[in-house]
Image 1 (cartoon, rainbow, N blue to C red):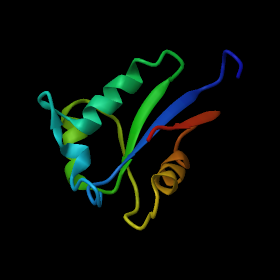
Image 2: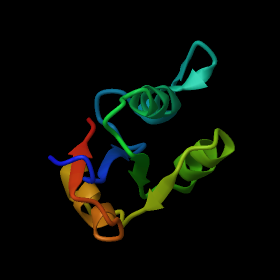
Image 3: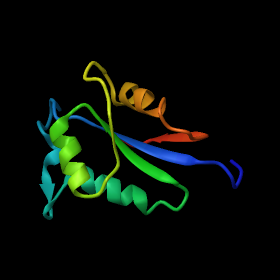
Image 4: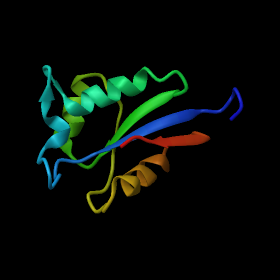
Length: 100
């Protein structure tokens, strides 16, 4: 990686978790879990941008309310990596980091 590389993190998020339904929006110390994850990613010095990829309007609205960047994706993805692949198509970056 050279000094001019653009590095972007994408966090996949959905509500239909089988082990913990609505996991992305579960509150931890007053903030939804997905907001905590997003904010932790912002602390990484090598990341130029951070996005959350989701198919859910409720997650989108929550994230935007907290100033997070969101990319809406199809609801047909079987994995978080599939969701990230769709979101990455619209991002100009040399490196995409899959945050799960």
